[in-house]
Image 1 (cartoon, helix red, strand yellow):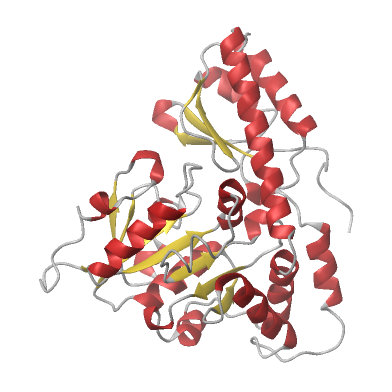
Image 2: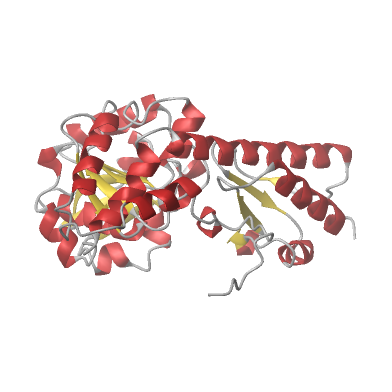
Length: 355
């Protein structure tokens, strides 16, 4: 096959735009020769379980999936009866970016709450944590949070612990969408376990695709009592891979050593570098009309800028609108973003804002 794209182009649209990390590609090749049992009955999937138990504790059980939406749907469907509801932030990926899959495929109700900086608090949860025993209301039985959030912010260990305790005291479970869990660990300088298992999280959707692998996430059940029928839910949700060893090999490559943390630290550092350059431009007047809108606590930078300038910048470096009505955009860095990429992007932003 002939290469069809320009490998020198670098976007700030999503960490999904990046290629596969060489160590992950090597792991896929290493797992390729010969035959292994299908559907997860293979040595690589067994090893993945060992690796993730090392991160999350001996009680943890892992179920690889194809993608993040699949991991979230499988997690929530296994945590809830058909009459159950999930309390989440209005900005949650499950609420705005999964095509209605949790509700349509998972047969559950989302109870979305507007939040500052994309983060739930016990007080915000209580806006929807009511009506148990009322047959006319979908029963709120799970709280779902995202770490890091869709706005690039990170919950602290104490904040997650407080949410877990609050949910559990009301008979609810806590699910964590960890598509960028590694970025949170890098920001907090903490282990994955410290703000999941040890904080009282019941089930995690563990990310991989945004952090350097080809395709694959995993549902990690931390509390065996919080999810039932996982093998069956994964299959009927069309998330059971026939050649599971290749999904598992990728996740092993990411989490067996420190690749997950190296990649996340690089992405976060480039977002910090981008923000520093933007702040400098705002302060020296070379980026008139630009305003930063969210804290930078992972690999995302959010800003408002004139629409015409945004379109000129986008023509050279792809990125997405976040709130089109407000003129807010999102700039994402990836594990393969370099200081040169950031400097080039900053030059483009400055040039187009002063035209």
